[in-house]
Length: 271
Image (cartoon, rainbow, N blue to C red):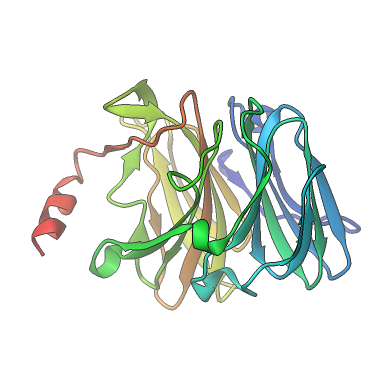
């Protein structure tokens, strides 16, 4: 199995299904956790030196930090409803508590924080929702903590790719600290599949092919992208969701397309 793929795994008596740290991923910036909570269960994350964005992927919950509290947040029972999520942002040296009202799936997205921003609730109305691409390259993107909201390091968005489609395509990368041409950002893809017994494919590769991995990803799996291009393809009959987390030396998303496939963008603009 690829070292870039973290399979979903839930141990008895726990809520945790994914746990990636900078140490386990052998990189510098991103940490990630996913939890499945039954109604009445709760989870608390101490932010320590990180800023954290908790995304309520599905279900209804109460949420709080050390100073703030929000009741009954969450407006979708599935990530495939094409509704923006509720999320909670917390700075370093704080905490986030999620208490499940219904069954809840929640993701905690982490990156180094400077404590420059206050804890806040990010509502669906504050997210930016758009559809990009044409034909089999159509995807539905929701920016959760991107240009719509400030943060120290984190960039968080989610993407739905329809059946038989492609996203993060044509392939692009963001692994070189060379602004304004490109920025260096680590990235994780937390995958969900509808129906959940399905799968999708993700390839991660570099120009020199020192990394060239193609992975079959299933519901709840996570792919780590330390560098390189990283397209996703979805088989007929299934649709794909993924939650993206990015972070790097600067909070700026500037990507570089694979020159072998950039012609597709130019063709699609003429369509």
